[in-house]
Image 1 (spheres, rainbow, N blue to C red):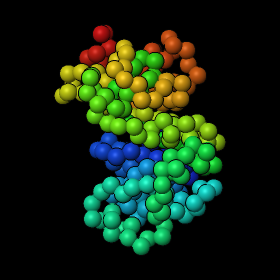
Image 2 (cartoon, helix red, strand yellow):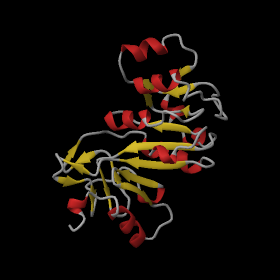
Image 3 (cartoon, rainbow, N blue to C red):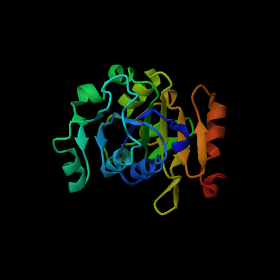
Length: 216
């Protein structure tokens, strides 16, 4: 994922272990910005190391923008009376028209599964809902409207201890639609999807499936 985040880009990243690993991989970048639904302790690391400066955002310059703080006491203490961190309502943070004003906006989201067309399921495992309506499509649409922006879906190639592929013929539920996704990333590589035909999409996604499930 880090390969596709240029210096001076602004990113939105979700929460969880994978999101934190992606944020850690951004060490070494220069002058990144954050405009996100939530921030975690890892964002504090990037601010303190000088990676995140928000210096090149066309709006909210020098400010980290989010809706919620999701982390430990360290995060809350860091944000307390810190004017460089601004919490705003979802009508602002998740508004594609606002996001579109920020150049090189990169939405980085995880998924439960992706089908061979590139449709993304981030809400349901089989018959069971495990997440509600989030901001994934808001940020993806915003990234599509941003000059130089891109949308990235990152997920492990397997689930259930390696016994099930997360890239499937069909998704059990669709959170984000195939036409808006630029890249799908697993530990086996990057599938570039935007503007591709159905056959090209299938070929690109099969290239990043876990080897144990390619034949299936």
